[in-house]
Image (cartoon, rainbow, N blue to C red):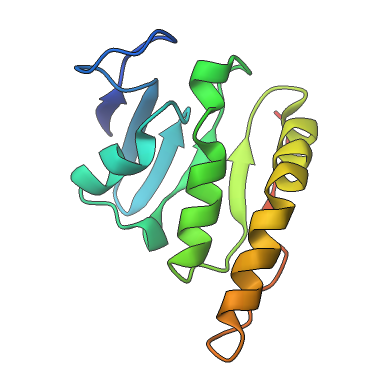
Length: 131
């Protein structure tokens, strides 16, 4: 197994450290642990395209560990990935993801309107089992 520390920061911004996130790789399988600030850029720098961004395990619901979940969800969808975005975590993860989708609903509808004639994406952006 290979572990890449994408971010080891904490809530106060630090220009030398991104928010908490670790990319785990075993063979062809990848798993992202936490989605701190800047994780999308860090994944790309680690060679993982948005279309291939992996499932996510949330360790706990502090904002510094989940702040970029919306970015991951929307960006992989914009990149053409319509497979459900798997997010695993402790009790409360489904509720948190439902609230995130409610928050992003307007953005999703605006983007769908711009996609007309290009490709119609579906609303099933994810599944959120709790551990």
